Amino acid sequence: MSKLPSDLSTVTTVAVDLAKHIFQVHGCDASGKVIVAKALRRKDVLPFFASLSPCLIGMEACGSAYHWGRELLALGHDVKLIPNYGDRCIFTHLI
Image 1 (cartoon, rainbow, N blue to C red):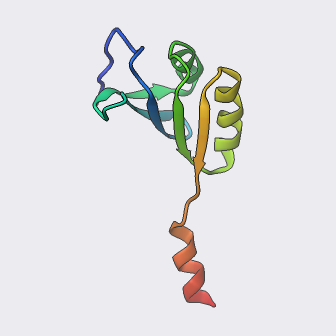
Image 2: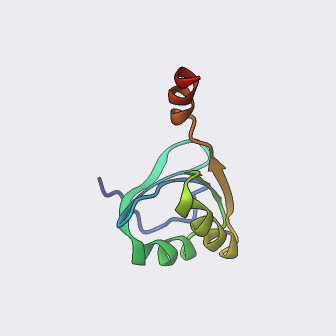
């Protein structure tokens, strides 16, 4: 899925799925309408977010999320890390 308009100024919230090479980006405006849905290579992530006006960015907390969070904070964005509770149910069954 690649939806990339020429005007990204209306993006207020972005969700990022981190991976090794390809990152999925999903951006919405204030009403929740999808403005951008795109796969980005690692080298294209910072230039993409530099082209956005400051917005809220959410990503799952993992090892690389802290690095990317600092990089995006330096660009003026508000970054929120979402904890992964998927492993929690596995550990509760082991106790």
